[in-house]
Length: 296
Ligand SMILES: [Zn+2]
Image (cartoon, rainbow, N blue to C red):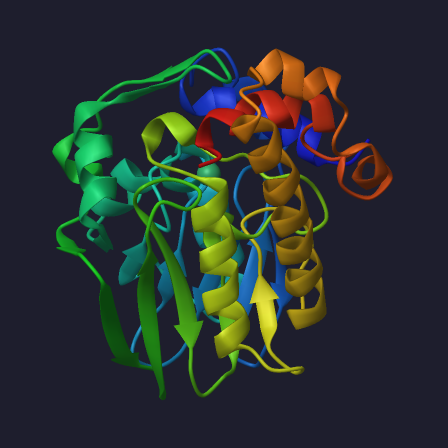
């Protein structure tokens, strides 16, 4: 079992913060150096990205509220500060849980329009039986965009690009041009079947398209921070994309035959993929149940 299992459990923490505050005490935030100025930080929940320089600390995602102090402390150990800017790659609680803390302390928050809408309204994820309350004003993105937005700081141009109907309906991927680094948000779960939030606009086809777009930006030396899992390269992203395409083709065929999700699971269409992709977040059977409504 990989460490993603406790992560899954702790996704729930975003939705019931008091119950799991104690577990959060155990979490360590670890910076992983990507370039001289860019770090991936791991703790619990989605991997963070941080861009550090004289113009200010730029943070990508913020895990869970009880971790904010530790995240800021970890940033200072690598030369960063309280983030000047934060971008949310999507609305899920394991990527936005620290928004109220950071926004309340003066960090300017950016996201795709739909992220702000979902955070303002609150949400329910039936796959995990988890409810998220509406976020208070302090945590809501102040600047929202539709297709893309660019940041010019710390000697680089950093572009956030919206990828439609992929993991959710509001995903952005972040591309550091000069540094040749990508933060893929939850477009990439490196090494295992991804959660796809079909009831909030996600789809397998959109995930494949988004992966293709990222592959077009990347070369063999691009470093890719995945939403979940270890730091990746283009070959690992390509393998993930290939898995999605294979699964899509087989599930699509079952759908065209009129099979229900239960019948699709019973047909074991992903049996040969299980050893490689099914020992992380979901088994193949569970993954089919989750994504089948989003195969079209
Ligand atoms: Zn997510």
